[in-house]
Length: 188
Image (cartoon, rainbow, N blue to C red; front, side, top):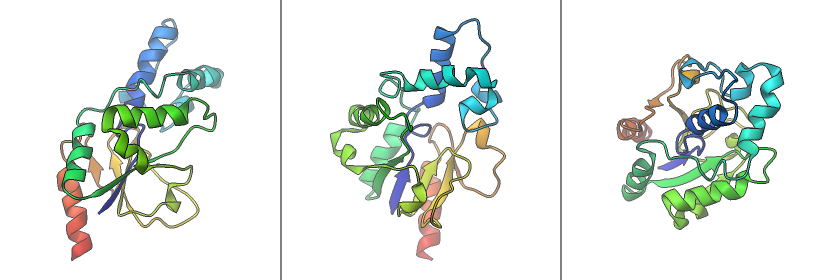
């Protein structure tokens, strides 16, 4: 199967590192713990006057490069490849891409190997990308086309209210069951 995996969230721990940077840079400002997040975009749940501060954190040099891997993610990707699945990293860059794009490539090379950098797809519209599965933490994926892939949610507090979708746990410990079920359904 062709498995597309979003980078920020499922592979690179964007949320954890954002909160760490927020608390380091602005210890006197309140923050919303991940467990209390109800929106996909972190800036949507904060007052409007924080928007430039929030964006400044993830537009800063080395933010994307230094994101820690999500527990179990690196191992899951390696196992998918070992099992013969074709894996592509399908990620959306920031519009202010100056640091983001290069650092996404560097992150993949550091954590998943240089070979996988040949399998990165950068796009703002993931519906244009063909595949069997898209593993993504974004609750709804919208775009130009009807997707060829099944959207599997990478479990996060802000997407738990979305019904009727398969989920991969935030530690990747059930990915094999989910992928096997999709593969069985495709083959039957």
